[in-house]
Length: 179
Image 1 (tube, rainbow, N blue to C red):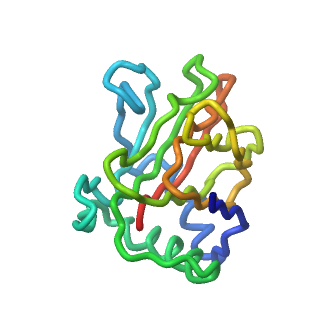
Image 2 (image 1 turned 60 degrees about the vertical axis):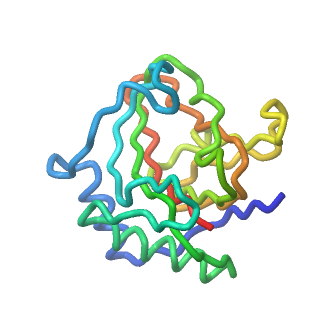
């Protein structure tokens, strides 16, 4: 088990760009009626930075004008923490709002190949982190805290996002999967 959870270094310009951009009326969000499966009804909003690759040998395709901005933050965090990045499989900004459920379905981002996950928290709520499970998908081995500008990197374990539990709460994260 390899889990790293630390404060990510962001410049004041990067923080300002996130603060004034992501939750502004001009940032493009896309609605999904389901978060993990085709029937879970865990609706959320997303912005694909890099489109998902289902091939472990193919880099994800850039999909957003904001992709390089977040990639720079991701790569800096990895460099600062001696994390090697060979290939990016996908990257997305996910915005969850209250939907009546406590957490997303337990899931593995790429069930067919080995990967790692990077999650950068962009809102500040210690209770809205991520549960990381052992291989049995029942035993919680780590719960990251949803502290703004903290990041967690973990091997491709099954995990679930802890969702907002009351109206008005937001869970905003930037997710990269890579190897």
